[in-house]
Length: 186
Image 1 (cartoon, rainbow, N blue to C red):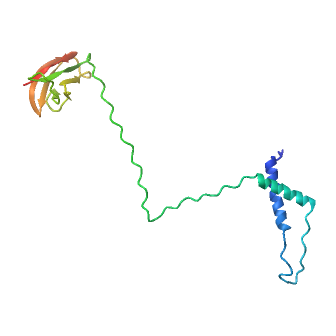
Image 2: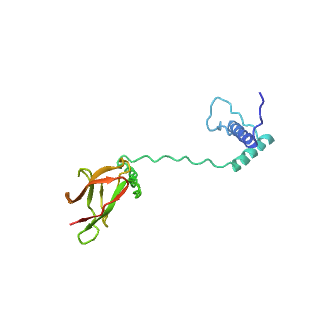
Image 3: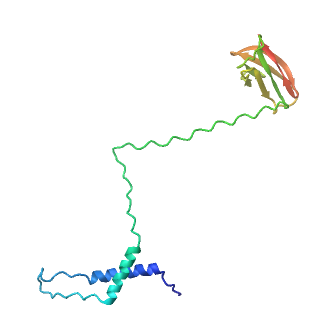
């Protein structure tokens, strides 16, 4: 087994520990005159040149050593205080916007106007039986319904509802590409 020499700081630390143990063992003894007993008091040996050198080494190590950090105690929660509220959950992400209309694709688009010619917003546009709105017109009356997933050449019934009442209908509209239907609501 190959032993490696200790670094200088480690050697000084070990030497300081040994010196501290020796100093405690050779330290002042209880005074025999203060507590008389049948045992004989032995006088402590005087410091020698070697022990003075060891004391100097210990002092040098103590001066260069960094003080140990104070331990920090975790604060204990006060049982009379209510626990802090949990952080709020992250806001849900809004749904992804629908893909933009493909004006060159299969679909029906157009503009719904009032009898005065102004755009009519909020009109429900249905395709097929008027069960639900396929789309609702924008504030300026424009709309678009994509039929890209439908087969070519089908006939569709297109109805325009205001307040749940059918106001205009175009029946049997054949869609083989982009179809434009502009209507006027009386």
